[in-house]
Image (cartoon, rainbow, N blue to C red; front, side, top):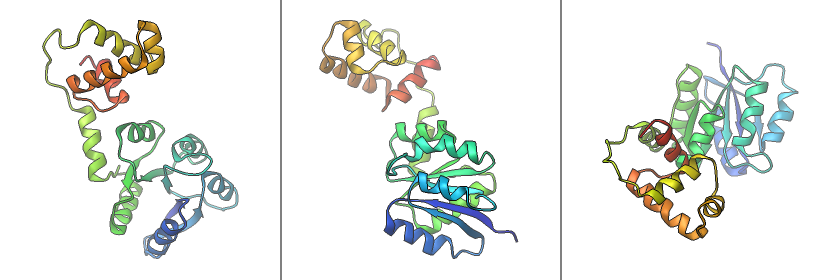
Length: 210
């Protein structure tokens, strides 16, 4: 059976060594690149005869972050799958990675056997995610209950419109003649009323007409 060519990109030496010691000894996998940064990975990529099929990429890296490196990796390896790994499970980080072309998302709290299963799954055409991540993704796409008219005040609607327009808190405050702290208070109220936890989720709900 042909082995799956794997690349590991992880800046923490202990984590990198642990993943290398386990994953690279698995009979199904062949580690073709082990790198401590995105820049190191891209450099090594020019030196290998055949590139990886799966890239296990850390989100938090020195220099280019994993998310910043994703478009470059997708450009260089259009047929490869990128499996993100991180300690973060916040919605914004997850959706940034998915929008940039990540195929799967694994939390660093996962067991080594789960890492292996995720690599094998993504290589077979799957889109693996740690349960906590999958829950957030499902919550993002779960339709809101129909809300009664007038749920948001006129001022709250104006704040939401500013967010949809891509403005930060200070810019929304300037547009509405409010303080940034007041805008942040309105944002918290909107999050609570609409049952969302991030700007990404809020904008998505608005775009979908919810």
